[in-house]
Length: 249
Image (cartoon, rainbow, N blue to C red; front, side, top):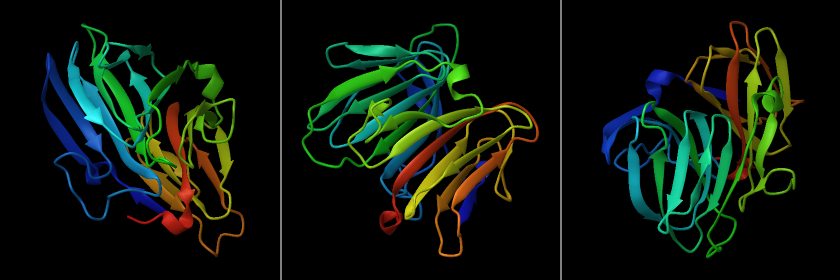
């Protein structure tokens, strides 16, 4: 089954933060936003598309027991912990953070002249009290053009390691090109069209800034996801979520 989430159905947030403002598209319950129908999708607990104004800072705040994946969608993202340590992400780059036993951190727009947009995903960890750590990976557009490029995985050593049963991929899909991904039995995926135009996911139209919750059903003999961009170039974020038995809110 493919459940399409239209952009107008995704919660919109905005507010003032240190040195500026933010706007957000929050896909699941987060902070003051609560929706019992959208608490999580498998191990995916949070999926936020946030934009910070030039020079704005999401101030230091604490977290525990989450695995965080950050994807820079535009501008320059800077991460800093309570000691000021972190890293800078350019557009298309990815960072993984194990919060584990506890960490203070902040998200920063490293540019004073341009907005910065980032996708932040939180996953439920596979075990408690992990040692906090931060790793990141540069990813060029050519690496993810017309294919799902693996960014984060709990199994593949070529990707950033995550302590959760998930994979995170990205794809820059050019006009009139086709890309496919085979889901293993009992797995699901969460797909987000973060830039460009609409795509067709099997026979379902996913609009720009729309998303899709994908789960394998018994009547799908070959659970292959096929997407065609029929309008213009577009990047996609694709997540392989946890086993179907836990794909419930």
